[in-house]
Length: 137
Image (cartoon, rainbow, N blue to C red; front, side):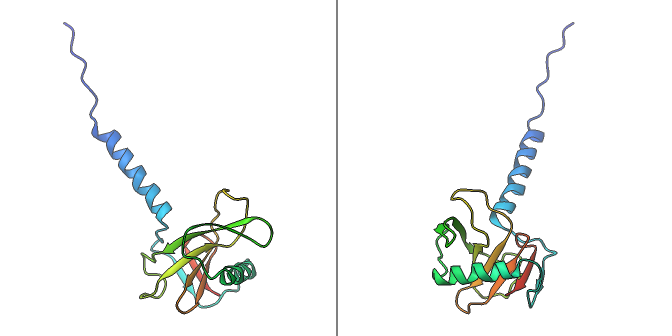
């Protein structure tokens, strides 16, 4: 006797899809890991690059619209717009914006180096590892 073919359950594939979406969105949204560290000064490698990028972004008025901006070296740099400080690693009650440190060809992939600026006070933080650690510039 022939046994009818049983359809496979739908929920494992759906669960995998939902979990992949959550992982992807947390990376895109820039959610800071709970183990992030915040330092009151910046003496690590690349702090001078972050300070230089900050000076250029300041000269551009710290744009709040995400997108590509021309850079002094003839290439482009990107600002992602608002940084929401979801994990509360930076001082609360402020509005922050995030800017890339290193320029590149327009449309190229972004790296992990960011500065985060409180536009009302001008206090700037450098994150060399996409919001895992913050160093005050």
